[in-house]
Image 1 (cartoon, protein in one colour):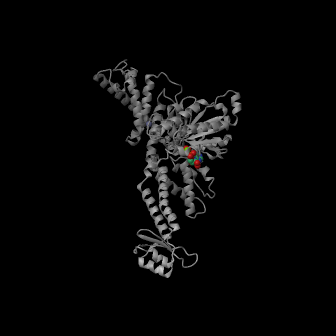
Image 2 (spheres, helix red, strand yellow):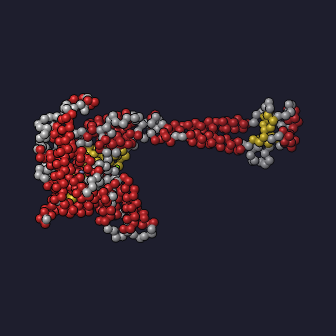
Image 3 (cartoon, protein in one colour):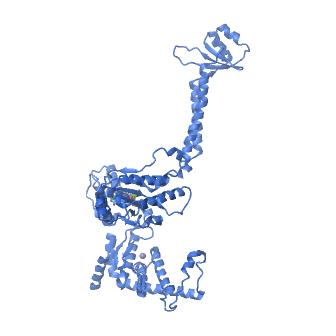
Length: 603
Ligand code: ADP
Ligand code: MG
Ligand code: ZN
């Protein structure tokens, strides 16, 4: 689409200008001089005229070359004497024929511009309509599938993403020995989706899997599928899978799957049908092959939420591997890894570097090492020192700050207290899901940090107390901000939405409110589905609606008070834990419990 806008009137202007230059050049190289008639007569008398061609009003002619090998000189002049043949005869000049070169000259000076115009026109057409020249492109390079026999990349080239690596181990085992797996009747996942922010090393990991298992690596990116000419996307998918089956065991890697696999029926403008066809073909191929033949499909995306749900169904990309932003420890390892390639390294405080680079991903860190090296070269140092790294961090951070707000230390602190608030409240109340870990590594846009709580078992029933505790936990973040900073931030809006949802459900669905009683007050869910327009029609009176709102508010307020009390009681714990969290960017539930026990003993 972008190419269309590049087309401009300038192409025409340049084209015409070229034509003019060409003509000028031709004219001057064949220099036809217009001379006065008298001069012509003079040449005749001097015997310099070689030949002439006479038309009704004009005489054109060629002069005798002055020396052997000189360029012929042409002239023309306006005819004055009506009877010129006698005069020519008297000078013995050949005049009956036309000048041989006029025809060619005329042809060139007329045809050349025409060809030039055609050329410019074709060029423009090519520029303007890349999609519509399918007939031209069909023949050539049908499939730009990149096959690498050996990616040359192994897990040695990847650092700080151990969790993802561990999940990929199984695939590697399988690819090394597909027959053995088949013998045991094991079933491999067909498709594995690497999910994570840009630059965290998804592509790198995919290549490393191929390198580790020593199998060929077929790669193509989703956007390449889509940029294809009409009808070829689907063919390409077919080719890709066919080729891969011939080469099994091997890996197919589709980078930027979101470009191809966006949910169907969204954002449809031109080329959208094409993408849909390609996606459908991909689904067909996914369903049609058996992983046990030794082909593993890997894909990467940083926007899993836009993927067509059909892609994520069992038997397709049913397994997802999170490739997250590295925490401090991970960043340390990545920096160390990239430093190995730098030949002259001075004394570096890697730990401090890792602290300074909060929020950066692997690609940023690789860039950082490179920048610092360049700075050292430019400053004519013989080693890369901390000073260059500091300067490079500043540069990169300045660029990142706009994109990534979490590098700001003040916000980091707020997020740390907020997340600890959730965790502490949850740990102080009975019947809550145990806290696994807390991190303040920035993730998506919405969640600045998170507290991971794993449910001990899958829950179908929840008691009233459990629900209330859940609300208190959700409000714990804001309660901590309030207690510590005496100021609340916008960071809690997601928590508030969830807490309100639970409280509301308690009142209108579960009949857990004393003042409203055991009544189901929610409108018919199925009806809402069928007629979204009528969804807001409530089944109860305005008075009841008001009471529901009041009840919801009362529940939230009460639980907020509970959270505030816990936070105040545990302030010591929070202050101690926040130091660890700010330093390491993560803390496990166990560590937090220890700190809590310690401060209870001492307090
Ligand atoms: P993604 O595909 O997730 O956007 P890439 O795999 O393309 O990221 O990473 C780009 C570059 O950044 C890599 O080539 C590598 O140099 C560096 N990089 C990213 N993540 C890591 C990592 N975990 N370990 C080492 N280098 C990394
Ligand atoms: Mg990538
Ligand atoms: Zn929160």
